[in-house]
Length: 142
Image (cartoon, rainbow, N blue to C red; front, side, top):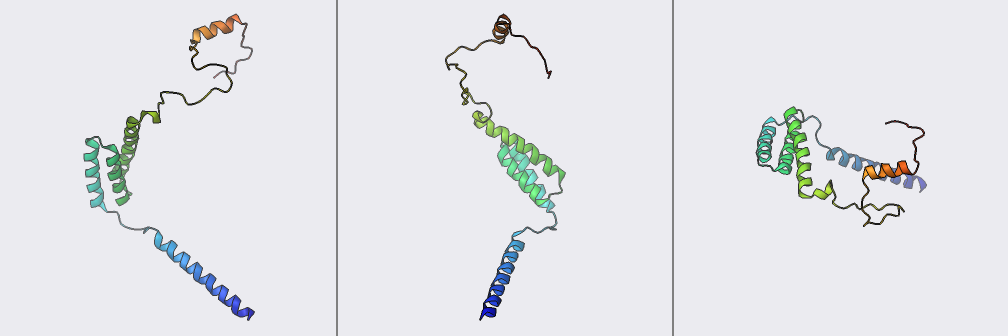
């Protein structure tokens, strides 16, 4: 009775491994598929048209498809890289708060400054330090 259970467990274990391995193998893309030069050229043409119209995010998608069709095309990679940068610029242009927030969201940790306090110019700050006897003893440099 004990050997029947161990054989049954071993068979179930092997079937599970075979099933998992077969789904893993079929889920991967073919490794040695030939590049599709015609599709790459067509996607480059569409991407260039979108890029010329200033639709950088659309152009990026076309260039991505061109790179996917022919991963060896340096032209497709260059256009894709450029479209990624301009696409990011387009996103920032739509929402400038991504890069340059107009109000600081960070609070000072006990600096004692109120938000309505006027800013101190660097010249005034240096003058105040000189009057208080502040002196640099050891300069580490930049």
